[in-house]
Image (cartoon, rainbow over all chains, first blue to last red; front, side, top):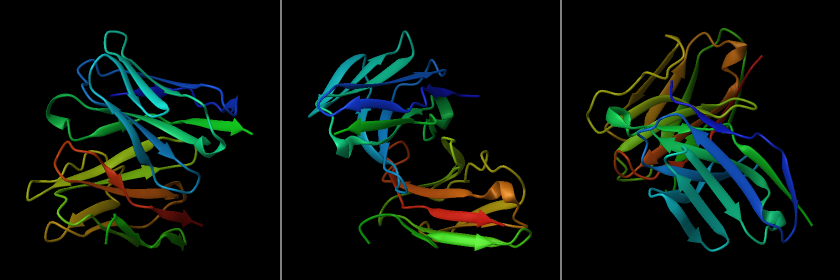
Length: 113
Length: 113
């Protein structure tokens, strides 16, 4: 059973601070990792993907990957109230089921004005 | 349409009744997924369709659940003899290729009384 673990939160940060979201996964062969944002009552929306060890930056978002530690993180700089949402970590399975994404339960982030 | 379309957006039914949920993927997308999201839970994989290949039904929780995809486009998820534990948001996603980015619909919220 492939597992993806996230701290459920809630994580509360003040506006302008850095929010740090973490994720660990069990499938050592996984090569593709994703962060989705889900506003309350809405569908998940892809915000970042990462495939190689290290950091990947896109605007205020930075994804970090460490395959040896089976760890993925998402940093949100200069957090805004509009960033308040649930953030889902997703890992693409390795092997013959590589079409399948396994999701964590999500971390609820609240950014306080 | 521009995105993945799902209907109905909300469905309230009585225990024991059958329900059908519909998904219209993005035009040209060959891969189609159904996921289920229960309160406080992550996205649970249900079924995957890719072109004319046999679907991966490994995530269907019981034989009361079935799905089909006609003409490689629209998909219907059917739940027979609904139970209260079936209450959840059923999300459909499509992808241009088998291991590509998933685009989600807004979901069908099912409530079984």
